[in-house]
Amino acid sequence: MTRPLIIAPSLLAADFARLGEEVAAIEAAGADWLHLDIMDGHFVPNISFGPAVVKALRKHCSLPFDVHLMIAPADPYLAAFAEAGADLISLHPEAGPHLHRSLQTIRALGKKAGVVLNPGTPASVLAPVMDLLDLVLVMTVNPGFGGQSFLHSQLPKIAEIRRMIDASGRDIHLQIDGGVTAATAPLCVEAGADTLVAGTAVFGKPDYAAAIAALRQPSGMVA
Ligand code: DX5
Ligand code: ZN
Image (tube, rainbow, N blue to C red; front, top):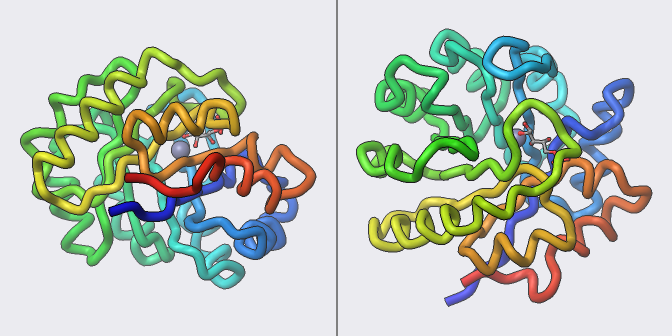
């Protein structure tokens, strides 16, 4: 059985002076989800935006909001992002201190839950929390900035996690984030990804619909 590849443009590369227009435009251009990168200047060396911005954007976009937390600690802010309109909340195990508890909290808030693996984080951290997951996000850059180069070294880990997900029998998305372009997207899909995040490769292009279509090549479907 095949299903459509999910494209989640990252707002980090949008024009921050026109965010409402940007999210409306990306929905009109055929995006499937909106990826929102939350950075605190502590867990990662960059600051982006918080729940007030997420809440304000909810009125301008009906796509699922895929919130990627790069903040530590994350637990004190989970309810705020849920109330702001997140549909899915992902966090890094290193944000600590209790990954299992954080995932339980996200689910108790009625939201989908994801774990994000940095390039230096092994797939083995997933095994004890597999039953709480709706998504695994594999970073193909170190988190903190858009526009970095795709780390091909992560492709075997993507394939390893695809095997873990299939063995679990659970419906868990496998998402890739960092350096995803029309050139690297097929490598991600071939390794087993079903959801692609792209910032620069979408918001950095003049024609968002064409940019999203380019990421869906060749077939736009995943196994
Ligand atoms: C990086 C963020 C990414 C970033 C991707 O820490 O998690 O979502 O926006 O940007 P590109 O697609 O430009 O690599
Ligand atoms: Zn991200």
